[in-house]
View 1 (cartoon, helix red, strand yellow):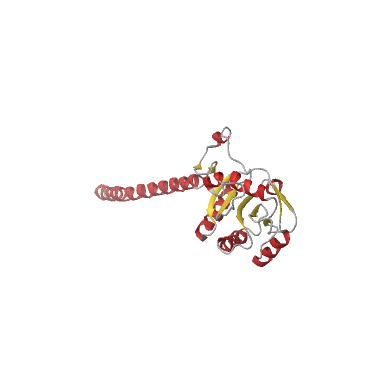
View 2 (view 1 turned 90 degrees about the vertical axis):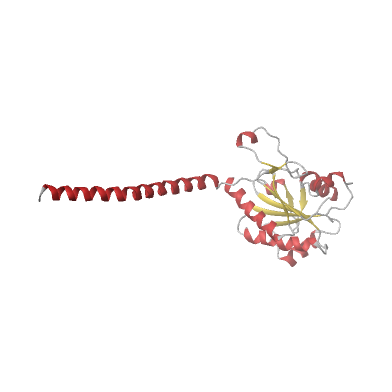
Length: 236
């Protein structure tokens, strides 16, 4: 092989390297960007829910360090009776995520819609004993244990997961307005005997803090509730 021929081959090889180098660099750059984007997505995909500490339902997000010092609003102690005649209290929901709402069995308007929508929540977590639902009657004098049982049977409510509660009207109303802020700020100004009615459902975490407020008559809000329950499950 002559020297000139070898020089031509060498030149061709160098030209080939020059042509492929930018493509190789671009490929490496794309792989790097993809890896970074995946890492960023993984780092930012961990959602958190706010805390609600007041009747105006202003959402508050706290860092783990802040949670050690800030005073959070907590659901007060309670004890009621469910549709099976069992006592349900703070101990029942201790360490569990639960959804709370307020209704009465002869309600002709929003209560049936709320119940129908909350059945979707029951179905979504039917095999999870760590997710409970508490529906407090705002007419406990007429919503006896027997009446609640009829209502539960009619709607196919699973009493192991969903407790329909009756008991002291004063305790239910005080809990609704002062712990759950069920009627928002206006509820705190009402007389204790004024009728209580709200379409809101409340998401309570394992420590008894309010983490979400939803209009239980709206299917989209109930879908958000289900998603937020899953967020709570993932971060606890």
